[in-house]
Amino acid sequence: MKTSILGSKIRTLAVIGAGKMGSAIIRAVRKHNNVEIIATGRRDVTLRAAEKLGAKATRDNDYAVRNADMVVLSVKPQHFPVVARQVNRSSWEGKIVVSIMAGVRISTLTSVIRKAEVYRAMPNINALVGKATTAVAKEENAGENKQAVEELFKCLGSVYWVPEEILDVWTSLAGSGPAFLAEIVDALVLGAVASGMPRDLAYQAILDVLEGTAKLLRKRPVHPAEIRDEVTTPAGTTIRGIMVLESEGVKAALMKTIEESYRRSVQIGSEIDQYIRKQLGL
Image (cartoon, rainbow, N blue to C red; front, side, top):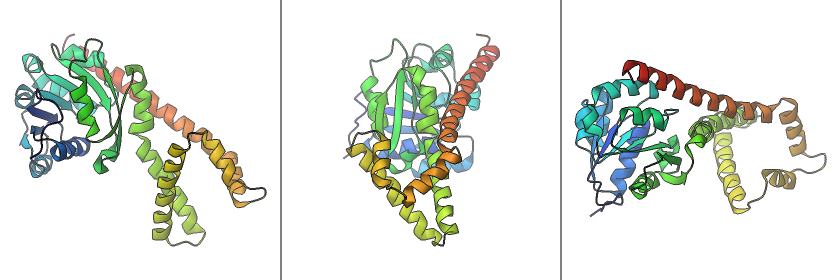
């Protein structure tokens, strides 16, 4: 029989918003814990999927929060004001609340969620295969249930505790990173196809290369440029490719990609904060 690694205090977990990330959390927690899970969603397909994962499904966010010990907020940031209106203020009291909403600040959360222990986290879509990379920050006075929060995200993959001011950058790098890497993989595959390689073979090859390179970089903690220099030989194939990367500004484009994504995360946080305070008269 599975036992809970979330601690004896956590008997019921509520997942508000059982979409892709919400369902990934349900699946991971179900694999490692015997806690009861209440999942919410707006669409029938979402609720049915949550039920298949072993959660009790409902559209009633207040019911889910009121009956849980730990609450994961996994709705889209723009939907948080709706959740804030639907859940009674008293229902949050005494709960451990963890938000994985991009950009939404702890100060915004605590303006609505009072008398609760509030955390902000950002996992990524790799949770679907148990390889998420999650950063977690806590409000100043939180920490009593820090271990339970950490164990929740360890079910998904690796966990890092960071100051909240890093979370927007983390969102752009690790949260959006799988999408950026998928684009790079697709571009490299298309280049191989243009040069005569079958697409399926090129795709499998670059995935192997990506996985192997990650292991190599982790095993040999040197600057990535050192690995590059080991592969690059005078007048060889690699240096010709690097010349193209440099002339096309690929490195600068990737740097700007992270920077722009970071700015959007900060912007989302400001927009949601202003909207919440206006709508709720805070």
